[in-house]
Image (tube, rainbow, N blue to C red):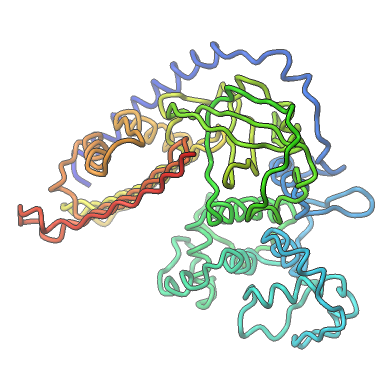
Length: 471
């Protein structure tokens, strides 16, 4: 890595520590939660034993509210019990919004699995879901048995959910790319691409020790979290956008129902078509305002519990995901967690290859008040990785120094990002940049310097892809 790059990361960390250590405390003091926050009506979405996996309570509640996950007759969810293959298939089909189609399948239909007799005897209720999964390509063409009651492993679930996203073609294209896990040799050759795509799309990640543990059984709580992440990707594929900011107006006096949207089937149990709707206006942290319809009964995660959207108030910090002009998902954000100096950017991914042979990869997300970041730097045959708070602090300093806004041009954004790292364009071999802003706009930039010694601008290949979804 060149000295300039090392220099900016040291300075970036110092800037970020100052911001997070002092400015963040000041901001928290200015936004004291009102007493009314404790008095809001609550939705009961927890199971009797949800606290046995406290980290997953929100994910479990979300999937319950969408009728993707259900508990047992005794009121339990058994979050730490391994999810079975048939359970995983059923939840994937529900997540895709295809449950009604599954219910219409004839129970007399014959399955071609070698263990079809076992399925018929013990899991007849799931046959329709299995048939839909077959039609949607959720199984491998070589699968001759389902083994429905077998615990689903991380490797098996990763493949299932990547297929649910319709990314099989992309997975096949990365079959020869070795995953960045220390136990990559334990991943079956025919599953490598699916693991790569699952990681790339944020569905799964590795463990702190750098392993993937492909053969580890997935618990029901873990399945809930994986389904939430997959659902986020399905929404984005459907054209939904996410706006993060402050509620400036909210009204539930109206009773009109919105027009049917592509996500209706998925969210039928979360403020469905028969529910009353109001309107909500959110001012994003980029400064622009958006008004959407919102179901009064929509389940909103709120301080480790859930409230109906009708309990949201003007002044609340929120993240809302909208399909067209209808909010399909909303989350309350603790204002004490909001750093307004960087809140305008919700996702920042950078891959930078410099002319001196150094490579830098940055992944940063600021979702619903939760910041995650990872920085990987490679130079002179050595690799250094930063994760967690330290990485978030560094990237926070970089973003503040860059001062990127969604109205900038490709050249301005590229220039600002490089300037914040004390780099010139002629020091860059290749650059890939993806940014999501709090107003829902997404920008992708790719730059490649084909001839480092040629000052002719024609030697530079650039592309700029913008998704401007303001409404």
